[in-house]
Length: 444
Image (cartoon, rainbow, N blue to C red; front, side, top):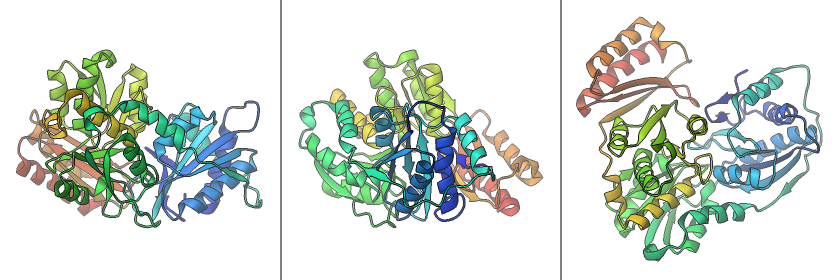
């Protein structure tokens, strides 16, 4: 049974593997799979604002406590807060119940190790094997005893250290879009406490409006508000708060590639970029690679997923990595993406350079890029389908030397992603549609 994708377990809430029985078994399996050690296992659990989060937490806790674990619930809290609080509070594991940028009908389970890193593949496989083992069941016990604690302050105090004294930025207006998600409970008051004038949208979660026409996947409401109010910038979080995208003072989108470039330059100037290298995924624009090279900084590419970015950073001792989608990892801060932390890093760079976000982001000159998502019946070897293979090979020949072609399955949804970069937008759009048409005909 394959439970874990690139970002934990994810699916439609109520359906396998996020049905009550399987969720409880996942909790019990996590407790069974850990390395033997003295004392009861202590687990921190938090969630985003989806209506299914509460019952999933209850079932997870039932499974965990059936194996003798102690469970502490932090209620609604961003994912990076759990990544920080797990080692800070000396928990054996941290669990976040969230489906990130997905609609409210979906949910997921992300697990962090005792060190605050995403769960290792070996342990994921052990949990999957235990869940699939039909020789045991979770006991039908009464509701599990769970203690509830407000643990937001240590995480926010940790984040506060990124920016330090606000200086000239004190009192400047910013707009936050909290996606009606986990950051809505902490971000507006936190940024006000730093000295910003905060206009916050996406801060009225009702269990079903998370990511609904708001947040990092729907930037138009934020763009409009920034332009209307003349704000310094806009910051868009996703549902669980582990990534951030930006709107500059002119209303233009600033993505993760631009953040990586400005952050890499600043860290290098400060002597805090070991190896003069950055990790990014195969989805990052070739323009980022060229701009970093101009600054004497190398780019190491890895598969899509901040888990893989983190693993590559640890393997090579690199301090900065991230994704175009806004998952940015600053190793000195946390070994996972942190939307609030990324926003503070951007503001810190603006303060240090005395430059606006538009000027900083303009250093990245991107090649035109097209990304098409085609929903498929099932994941299969698309290169084994002659018509699809022929379309891909033809496009690769046309792009050769002038861009990139990347075809891959989503790690969390039944989608085949077709990404093409090249010199002309009209060309690459037609080429991407050619491949997508073949996929729709044979796999959709």
